[in-house]
Length: 347
Image (tube, rainbow, N blue to C red; front, side, top):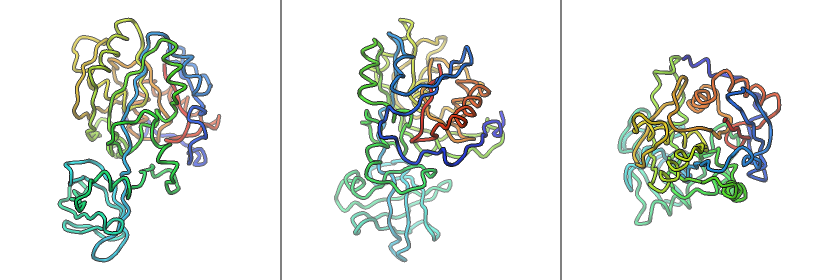
């Protein structure tokens, strides 16, 4: 397929800059694939579309304060570093935003010289930075000096409230540089109502990385290569998922990240659409139309940027024409878009 087939027009004022007061107060668009119909409701009514025996799968990754604002040690020029991937306790793959060129050996200072770093190597436009924590734990310093890595389409500086709201309520496994945003709508009340209805909740991990948002530059979508992201699906989750399938229940995935992790593992089970294996590792599974889903039955997801791998996955699950008809409807109905925006359910 062509990249241009995943484009759409969006008025900038529909890009949500702040979350709503209530997580579950967002609007929910429900797309029914078989009837090709669209319904409008609110997220707190999600449970109405879930049946006893279904399984709702969430991504428990936790967003780290991945942005560090500092300065060059030699010139004092401002520099902002985005941590992309931990290589070991001292080495991180990073992006650097600075007014001056950064070369191997360039040194940076953060805070009141509480944390130092220097570029060890360059790789594909990224930098490998070795940090000197001066005997303190890196996570401790990151918690003090780091900044919540809000997406660039949110045109404001992060504030204290983002530390809580740009995080799911069930986040517990640190490692993501962006939130699995479909999960931001969930509250304890919504989760409890799902359980009370007789459905189960399974928790897996996929650390959302830069690759999820890396621009697709090739007009031929198939030529795009997705960067690998770390995932883990434990035996407890696998047991819930396989039991739900065996009993005829549906698998509701919360977010494209959860969907990709499940599909990655489901592809390891040959000859079956009803089983998944536990495991951990790295996945670069790129899902775009046409794709034969082996395990996922329903997708809960936010409204995504045009020409991204995220909107391509949604199009593969929903059908491209139906998805963009829904997006057109969302614009007309003044839905809120992207990370802090509204949500859709595709069943």
